[in-house]
Amino acid sequence: MIKNISVIGAGTMGHGIAEVFALSGYKVSLYEYSDDIRNNAKRIIEDELVFMAENDFISKEDINKTLDNILLFSDLKDSVISADYVIEAIPEQISLKQDLFKNLDEYCPSHTILATNTSSLSFDEIIKFISEDRKALSMVCHWYNPAHLMPIAELSFFGNMSESIYKEVEDLYIKAGKQTVKILKDIPGLVANRIQQAIAREVFSLIEMGVATPENIDKALKFGPAFRYATSGQLEIADIGGLDIWCVVGDNLLSVMDNRKDANPLLRQKVAEHKLGMKTGEGFFEYPKEKINEIKNKFNKKLLIQLKTSKSYIE
Image 1: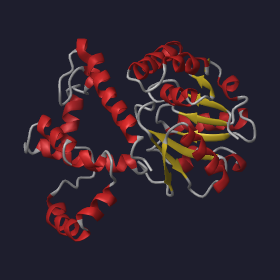
Image 2: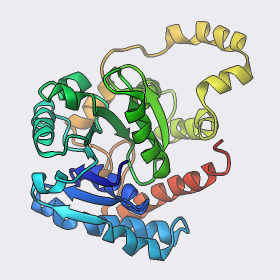
Image 3: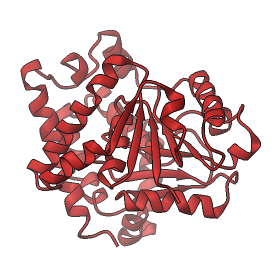
Image 4: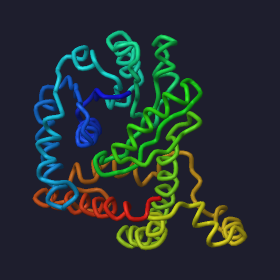
């Protein structure tokens, strides 16, 4: 049974993963090698918890309980010495993850389950240098950003572990309020990111062609396909609309849609101009520095509303 959880990396994803498990009542050891990131981690988590309390998603009492459940570490071995489950959220560099997994294999108890948050790197390569026994206790557990608000968790079942171990991890995630997606094949991007990239490719192409402004393209997505996607999956939507119709429309449109194999040149131009989005103040839209927190809170509040609403229709 999973009782003690360790999270490796307290950055963008790691702090949120630790936050979710701690909010669910688990004791979480959070390791971070960077002093600056580690020292700021609890402040960031507290700010997110306060935001959720102010929007009636959690109680005020939950804030201190959650923070008390998180213990910060600067030493990797100390952070995992009694862990039942470890998930890493370090940078997406294969050598870093391979070295980390080798160390975790050595430091962790023999029963500890190891997980990676990657969605782009090869799982087999990540676990290449650990013992065969540990490989049978290793998996991908991919979260979406922001981790504390996005309910999806993609869990791998690639043939290296038993059904009982998988079920133990799945139960952990369900208790933490996640909607789990069982991934049966190790492919780049898993499922959710591949679907997202397919949509993004056509969106960027429409902007490149000047079909509509960025504002109107986003509006078409939000109040068109995404409006249904918030509550229904693509296959359900296709069944309701009629597969014969989807077949005809596919024949008519797919041949004239973007099918390039790399990132859109428009994105490369933005990157070259250092217009990276909110982090630099401008991307497809402008983000005045004094309004960034307000924009982030507005974005997160929409996710929180969806998260609360989803509880009423999830079977």
